[in-house]
Length: 122
Image 1 (tube, rainbow, N blue to C red):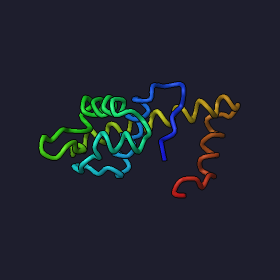
Image 2 (cartoon, rainbow, N blue to C red; image 1 turned 135 degrees about the vertical axis):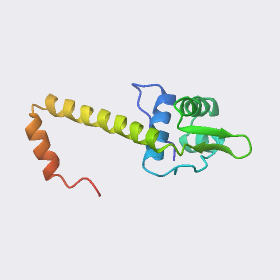
Image 3 (cartoon, rainbow, N blue to C red; image 1 turned 90 degrees about the vertical axis):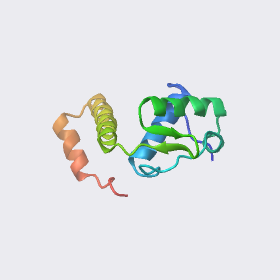
């Protein structure tokens, strides 16, 4: 099933974010081989050139390395992965807080809502 993309951002950036999240949550483990550009493009339902652009961005960020004999592998740099995870978590928290403010909730009300929520882990 093709991946779902939003109209408000370039597709290659959304692909990049999806792959980064898969790296951070262990779907693509540290030091593990990434699927080929063609395989991932087929899975996502996009042109291989679009997928290649996202993969090049992964390499530029240091999250993927090209091994001439075995394709692309996920970095094993734990410090880099921790830094990127913190960046993504901070961005998600900011977006959440902005949405709560738009709903008229205070920071304390938003925290209470999170504490009462059982979303995590399900």
